[in-house]
Length: 249
Image (cartoon, rainbow, N blue to C red):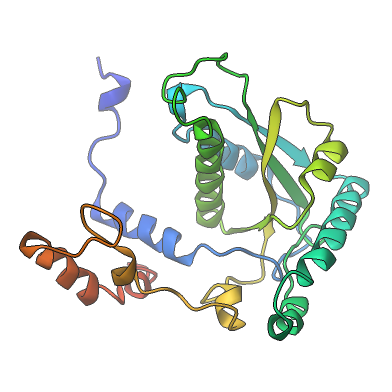
């Protein structure tokens, strides 16, 4: 009899290429949403993908609050607008005009919003893997968000993460208990297209950083030794890898 651990077998080359294509073509969507309902079967698959994310101590701290009501989304949007105005004033003068020109949410444009939470009490006060880093449960919920995001991209759906919002106000609107943290508020739906580059990169807010400058060895800013020359060379040679892997086939 085949055990669950034996069912899947090796990942094929085509499946590997597809995974990389999904990763490198995923976008934070704000402006391309269509007013087309998300099919329940598709949504179910995406939620299962999120639910199968890794979690510390297998505590599975996440819940998924589906927000379809226009009334609720308007409340969320109002909370965003207030926070967005406050945020603009936090940037240097030379950045404010560009900031205000950016569309940073799709709360009312997308037909479905999802809040992914973290229940800090789910596995009790002592959790395997959370004994010394108390935030590991929240990090687990972030893994669920990433799984959902990639599954949505595979299904042709866009996802946008709304992080410019007062957390207390979000908790009040969604009536979250004290022990439940709102980790990610997402906009989800069909889109007209996916941008070739991230929206903030296109707008000139920030460039894509060079991965070679982000890899160090043995310690913070540690320089490569002789045994590390191969990976440094490979990172430079693979600089166009994300673009190559976006191509089908």
